[in-house]
Length: 455
Image (cartoon, rainbow, N blue to C red):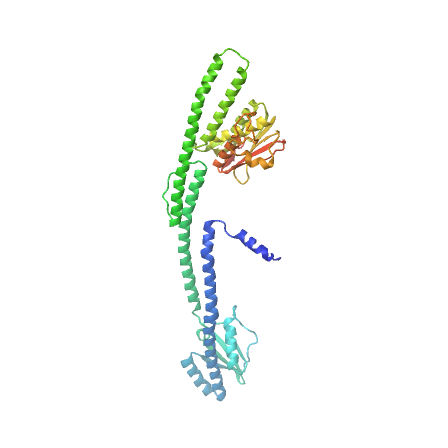
């Protein structure tokens, strides 16, 4: 397998680390605990367990060397019986002589091999005769055989005399303590993360224009302080929105009164040369007031509900047709999404009207995204907008010229209203070059989208 260069490892690891606060917090707790436990276990086995095992093996090897030398001093059956009784009583060793036998040729070693290596070193240091041992055949004993001229001197020793057999108890208690500590840590982290998630959900809902009741802050002191600050900020923003809406509604209402009087005077006045132009100015002023109100009104108080996207697109297409454009609508009849009907219709009508005012051919299309969500595209064959001015086009009251002339109908709020509505639904509006030659505006919003099957 080809290894990554050293400078790519940080990026490789970063992509595979958890991205959520819950996952990262859990990693911060779990990873140090696991590293610590591995280090403690390694130090325990390396510095303690192996040392104790080596001391036990050296003691056992010394007893076996004493038994072999004692037998060699007097290899008679009587001395062997006396030696075997003394070893059994004092050292828990079982000693027998197998006449005429030789040492086994096969080696029997444990899977890990630590006990075998330690015992082999101890026996090699104490015995001058050939020997053979097996630590795997009997779970509670060690079989050691020493070659003698008369045969094989076989010695069966308890396993605890050669190895520290209680090491697993330490590891077990260490694992239990680790699980308990990690369980407490996970519960604590989960409670803290839940408080942050609740705050994030409230902020997201407020950003979508939903009315969210005040909630009781909980969690750590810093999280509670952030929740209190958010609710205070939300109240201030809501007051500002209400004041802006009330102000523009009041101004619009006050302006409609003189506009109505002017219309009445024009209707009662005898025909004159500039009468038609004045009516056009009055229509444009009324349209500007309507756009101001739409921008100020936003979508507050309107709950989302399942709406037929095909009906909304067809309605927007009819408005564009009345503006004199040729309109093509490409959408499945059963396409449905959960949106705020009036606000979303306002966004589509603004985009379609903007396309109709700059081009002769307009295409409206919508589809359900494979990843979930809705995509609506509005295209025209007009002159388009330079790429460098895409961001400028979304600014309220921007008409993409220095003079802010009134040669075209509108006050530069169409794209701003559309983006505001899309972002209120958790999505956005982007601009690009259209295949028709003009501008392409794309609305993408998340959420459940359904397409009804045709009968």
